[in-house]
Image 1 (cartoon, helix red, strand yellow):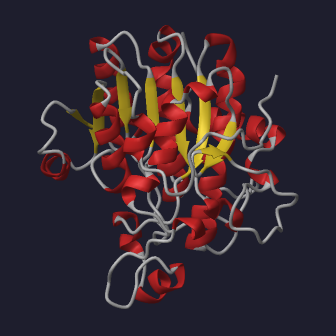
Image 2 (image 1 turned 90 degrees about the vertical axis):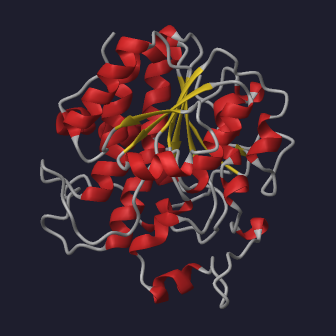
Length: 325
């Protein structure tokens, strides 16, 4: 039975931090992967899992940067992976599977935002390729370890930016239409949410559940490609250069931003649930239409099971990858 896209009363909220969510959770003996786990909310996500006793693996494109960021957590395992390089994803997955039998939690946290038009080696638009297709391929390759964990959870980082665009199935890679960096980002974030819908439907019989997450608006390295006027329009940095913190209006600290990912990955309240878009440490409210102006909640385009199935099949074709035992 499909989980309703409606709040369940988690007891947490917009101000909750990852440390508060993880309190009382024991992850001893559990294997956890966090992509992009060496900056911003990814770093705080790693910190929370590690504090609960998990063995955390962080695949990184920039190993030197990752080592420096994680220097106070020397037991975190680092490995090389570039989400825009399919062979790098395969190589990382092969190394993980050769070393570990099970993967209990996978957080697809890494991403890029509003970049200039770039393409990966296959010709795919970079935001869709890195944010969605790279993680899709990673999950397919790690599927045997997820199944063996008997209760694994996969968390996909989406965003309220899904309001900016749905999936253009006729021109995913901006080959016919004019490139718009924000439309491309919005498309990739809608894809992240739909990925969780489809994966959960497929994974439920195997005990693998999936969730998508809106972490909130947080000042991180994710904004490195933005102009000053674009950053100003996001209203996440004040005039003195300090982050604006207003959780009721989606402006959060990295510790608060990591909380919903950690909640989705570990909360007992989500046992036997999945395939939903979450925010503020709860299942988000379903909005009535894709034209809704509400900043909270999730638009229908991001939890449509038909679109999710279509995107899944297309992703298989684009990556040449399928779930395998």
